[in-house]
Image (cartoon, rainbow, N blue to C red; front, side, top):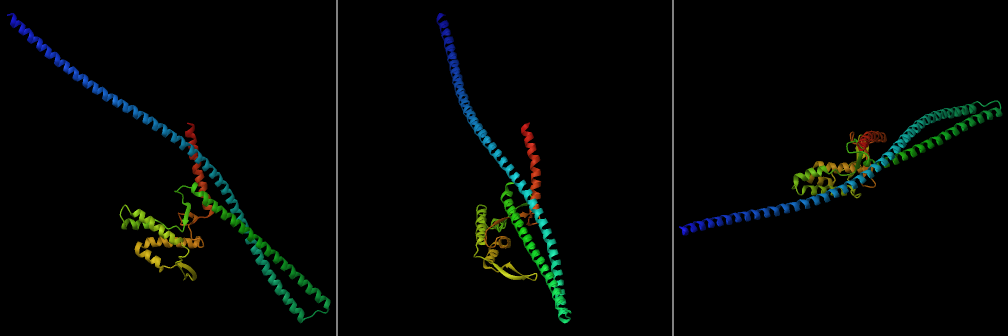
Length: 350
């Protein structure tokens, strides 16, 4: 009995030992899993810390860039205000010059009309003098003294009229010189406007700068887009337009001819020129028209230099803009800028 009881106890002990061993193994397995999970969390935490450091560095760099951009914007704003002040002064000066030229032109017209009247009157008196002279020759006076006095009187009157005519000629030349000087000042104002206009006007205005003699690229882009692959057409269009721009600027190429148009002898583009025929044949009518237009513009605006020049242009009407149109456009632009500036200043204060 005691042996079987002992065997039973041993079995219970063995069973308990096996159970405890399994429990120890399970706890070791859980401990290993918890250690691995802890390592993963630690690794993720380190990655998050590194990412946070990187983001802080990026934020610091962006803030530094924003400060630099802010300084640049402040500088550009100051430069824009200086340009606007300069343009305001230029606008006032242009208005003054315009009024002065109009006044001088009106004065010149009045003086010219007066000069024509004086010349007409002088012609009448000169004819009267010769008529009187003929009468004296045909019907002499009773005394030589009376005839001499009458002739001297007529001669003095003629001399006086000739002096008046001479004075009027001098005045006329003076007015022409003054008008020429005013025109030179206006041309200087146009050049100054051409220099500063791109910094002030935006792309939406109808008044701007047109590069006269520049070959338009769009016709070449259109034809190259059809003839070449998507990777090559853009480069080929740039090369092609640059090639024809160089030909247009070449003073040795002068594809013009003299022809009578509207009853007048004018210089026109020779459509039978070999280069133009080649261009039309290979690249189409639109590309040829772009080159012809550039040639016509250079022949009108810079025939001696044969290089592209900028001109004040009215894009709405497709013609050269006058100073009044440019000044009106600048005034409208400044009126549009001032409310925007006030809004920005108000937002900055808020």
